[in-house]
Image 1 (cartoon, helix red, strand yellow):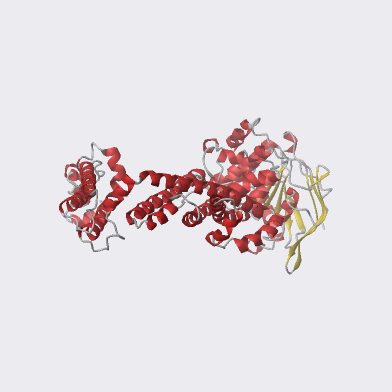
Image 2: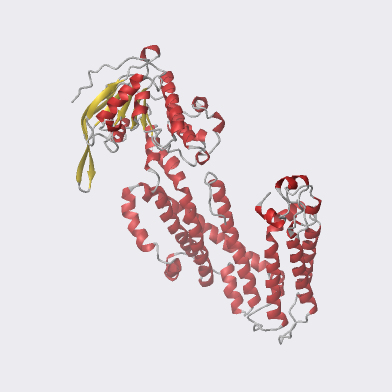
Length: 363
Length: 270
């Protein structure tokens, strides 16, 4: 019997509680707790998901608001896809209602989305506020601020160009990041391992490393045959610098005793590098990759805006040229999802490779 | 200065089992550390020999240069002056016939217990042919069921047992023990002292143990070399000819312990 229960039912002493268990009066434990035979029974597995019901209400309200409140005329034809946006909100609300009311039927799904309840409410609230401020009241100036349904229009009408741009960005990014990460890793191991390599490479890294890759952009366009290869080079440079520095620090900070242990057991220098130094440095290498990806994203967007004639960065400037702001929002959202997805992938790989570690940061 | 090169090792135990241990000779070895303030002498003209299959312990105040001597014997560092021989051959570099077990288990955290034990065989390219020896070594230290565990899942005593298995899998002729039980709790310590002695008796390697636990040195070793303050010189050699298995309550051990503490200037509380 816990202290809390003693406070809630002060009349029940310990032996009496064994004979007739005191009823719990916690509101959130739901109706099932009344039927539970003992106060110590586990929480019921399939309780009604109140958070889901709240989210369902929020999404249904968003649908009603979008459908019933007429858009404010903005001097051109009405915002397209308003009805479709309302139907999407109704659809989301209905699914959440089902998940909330019939937890037993949908147990495998609902148990996974349960934690997202508060976020689903907030998302509906945010979309509702956005909808009201743009389409319904016109409080935010219309050409620059588009309502949520305009994103649907962008994705439906321009998905081919967006898909091509995403593909081109991804290809450019992949080439640059893979080259840069490999080069940075090799340079890092080299200067971490060899004193002579460190003597020559370290000063170069110190001077050129902190230089922003975007600052090199104008001059690099002259040295490379195409703007595409320039961009690959600069993305590689942006990725490679942090990877090199952190690999180096990882290799340099390996516990000296690890080498002694391996050496007494007959390890060759190659064994020491490949089987001792590099595995020991891997946690740092992943930090370097994480930082390198940040540099790579920044370089990619600027390179596409200034020189490369394709990709999401190019799409942004192109849409700006046509003053089609909804397209910019659409491209930005896509870009955010793409970059976040890549980082998530990196963390998945890291968690797998470094499964021997404990207590690592979750993305 | 006691000359130990001619000192005959007591052959208790050595006669009853096959001797494959190394014969180690330390001749007139002196050693200095290069420090910013100048050279610091840590070992002063040291003579010491370990007979094949013998168990020798080095006992001395902390920082006296015992561990440095171990590094020289292991071949991890060259001596500034003097020579070190193994079976008559000079010791110039680390060799799998002389394996060190450090105070920290220094297991590789990214390898499982099995892969840690396999380290030496893998480093010499023998792993494919001799995988069974890894399993045997793990069984020898009683950790066969932990083969797939990672080091961070082990207790201190278990980690040190893995380190021991990792050493034994190489079939060393000299096992160098650098305070291997120093960081364990006192109960684990006592049981591992017995285990180590049993392993040594069964395998027949020579053993060189550094410790600053007087009782541990006397309980385990046949000869205990007591060192002075830095630079290390030999103050006295205590011979313990009690047969194995030994009993901690034996009056001869208490006698030797008093003697050792007196040599270290710590007998005021006796």
